[in-house]
Image (spheres, rainbow, N blue to C red):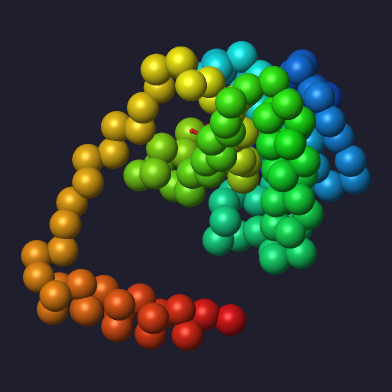
Amino acid sequence: MLDCIFCKIVKKEIPAAIIYEDDTCLVMLDIKPVNKGHCLVLTKEHYENIFEIPEDRLRKLISVVQKTAKAVKQTCDGVTITQNNGRASGQVVNHIHFHVIPRYSTDGHKYSWKTTFYTDEKDLKNYVISLSKRMSSIR
Ligand code: 5GP
Ligand code: ZN
């Protein structure tokens, strides 16, 4: 895609700290790492998000995510993997990518999720019914 920064990196039109490439995927260091060694794992082809990417491509991508996580884990205590879809989720670059972030027991990072709750058993059941219905309609 013409205007996509990650496509430009894939085509080597702009520089990046690339640590791995194969026929379909690329792994590079994030330009603003949460911790040093924070990797981004992306497809070489442009897919915007989890909804667009074909399943076979996603399988390849997740296998490179696992490989990256294994490499990252060798020098840290834990690994956080995140992936955003859409502005509301925090996606800034509209080219699918997974964040693979090395974590240390002492790094002090915390998720700032504000948790909510189901008002009662009926409320919870409605979510179960509605979501399971939607799940079964997806091919
Ligand atoms: P998102 O919020 O879309 O999941 O994350 C996008 C990530 O891409 C951010 O963590 C940001 O630091 C990183 N990023 C944005 N532009 C560049 C770039 O030009 N090069 C690299 N290596 N990372 C980038
Ligand atoms: Zn792209």
